[in-house]
Image (cartoon, rainbow, N blue to C red; front, side, top):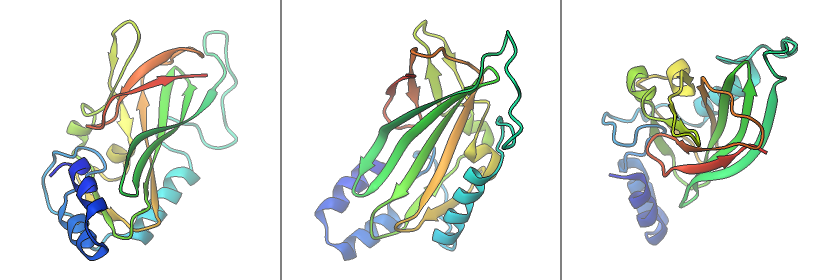
Length: 200
C-alpha cells in the first residue's frame, strides 16, 4: 500500500481506525515498494537514540567536529545552505529537506522524518545495494548523480523499525558532486516526488 493513500485514509477515519491503518499500512523510510515485516519492538526510544547518534557525532563523509580541514585553492571552503523544503506531508507525517552541505567535493543532503500523528509510523530501509540506486540528484546539464552513502546504508540497511508519535529521525544522503552556490538541481529521494532545490 502506498504511503500517500494510507495518509489520505487516515485523515478521514477515527483515531482508533488510524491506529489500525498506521500499523498495517506499510510505510517506508526509504523504498516504499519494499516488502517485509515491520519490527514492532523498535519504537520511539530507539528512533530518538538513533537520531541523536546521527546528529551528535561525526558521520560518513563529514569530518569530526572541530577538525574541519582548511580549504585549499582547489577545494573551496565548506558551505551550508538552510533549505527547509517539504518533501512529504500527510496526516501529521512529514519528511523535510532541512539543509545541504557542500564540502570536500561532495554534497550532503540532510532530511528529517517527523511523526506528528498519534500512532507509530512503521518505516523501513532497503538493502545497501537497492538504497544506493533509490535516490538521485539531477544537475542542470542532465547529469545524474547517485548517493555514495546514506543514513540507511550506514546505520540500518535492510531493517524495519517505527518512529513513535512525537519523535523524529534525522536522515541524510552523501552525493559525489559539489554544486556551486546559486546553482539548482532536482532531487529524487527514494520514491517521493522530485523536488527542485536551489543552493542560496
